[in-house]
Length: 238
Image 1 (cartoon, rainbow, N blue to C red):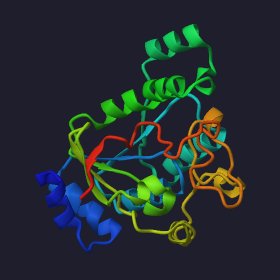
Image 2: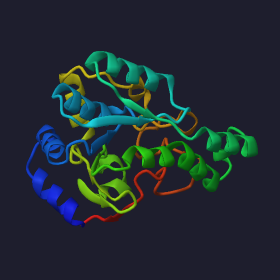
Image 3: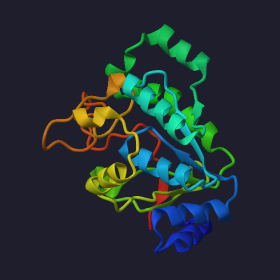
């Protein structure tokens, strides 16, 4: 683990999520950002930041393929808290080139094509959103998948040269739902229809009882670890 990540681990040890986020904002002013995709977890953390006026920038990746319900949650959140959620879009030249060469649904044809689409629509905009920052806040929880269970709440991200902090890493889904209910936080109604993990509309479906949390993401692919590339750059989880 890097020196910075180790410092953050010590700084946040034993603190509740709000206190930890406040400490990070004080320690790294203007260099802490939170990425939201408007799922349950992200809405809980957004409430923590906005309701407590913690100076952490919240951003989202506007891929151009998200659900109408996600747009509604985004808009409703800004209305309630009266604060900005910054949007990062893909570079239009790259999107146009991909669609002109391969059509609008190339991601169904191969893992390579799907990762290309994720790279253009999500990874490249994320790189711009994270540039120059020290800490990246996420809504990752340990129980979301086997891959994420092996992660830790503080991690060094070599690819982006920053530390990732997951403030509700040890929360259960019931914990998240209870928090949402307690504070009447707006949430994506797709969750009520069997969508625990919500991404781009063409690549997300509801899951069946007993399926993994992320089984509804890129369901046509035969993979045990299905990530879009946003959380694959961790090199040291100790």
